[in-house]
Image (tube, rainbow, N blue to C red; front, side, top):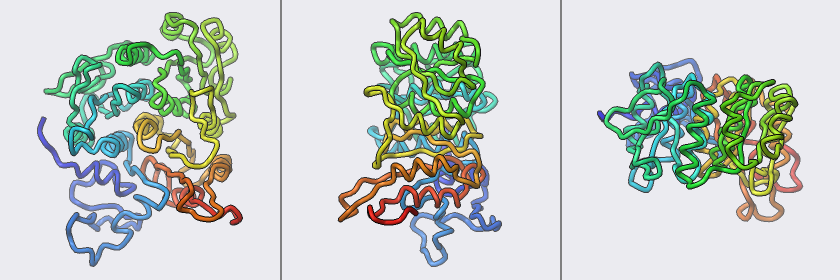
Length: 397
């Protein structure tokens, strides 16, 4: 594969609003002036103020932004953050390629980021790899996954682009239900046995379903799909083939009805993870624990991932951040310009504190997915304040 510049991926990690655009070196700095070039490594810094370096949009002391203008750029940047690709130890064994419009299959494919495959997701569009994805694939240089027949690329569905010159395992299926089954079959084979836990997500409620991606990447449980009032035959077959698995329904009855829950109870033990809206549903998922399954993020000292509920494919793009580094659940922001009050309350509830020495404390860190159109810099700054370790007798920020 032809070696290409990694500028688009670097910009996605550095500057919000730049996404995959701008081949002329111009960068958006939030001021309306798009004539400034981004800083160059090794050059003098006389004219490089904090804004030109991408701060605070790139990072604050408690947050880091993946500033892509779309999920394609975000997935490429996350893959590079998790796998720098500078030596064999920082290269993945395999990379997943899925069509960016098929957010359901992308969320199911997040299962492949769990052990042992640990395969990050890259997106294709209209049967081709966009520049950001191609650059990332070049730099990642996957080593080949022995658990997947030596494949370097796992291609999800016929709509996904082919990676020329790289050994590929193709997973086929006529729809997201069938593809979820194929993904689970590969993951179970790689792990030597299928997971006895299953995540059931609402196929017609993307904002509720998004949290399943990080949970699957963290736990290795498959994400299977249901309609609100009917259980697809393909999903039923996967569940029936297991020996009474534990089934975790994501979302309230408005997303997955009680009728479906009753059908599921005949196939395994059912537990519902729910909140009355996508924001509180994500918080409930972050808090949830069933033995060793789940996040159980009810105290300070954790990684967190924040994304717009309007960009469901960003959930899959962010999944590698939930399965590596600081391991964090996905939390949702419906409006770019405002932090929801339930989310603010949750962050206050898990905010770190110290009584004598902050050096001996624990810390929270947040990844922000998307550019300023997804999550504004103002909201990022508020999140930063809520993640900051505080003296225990200090007033709330």
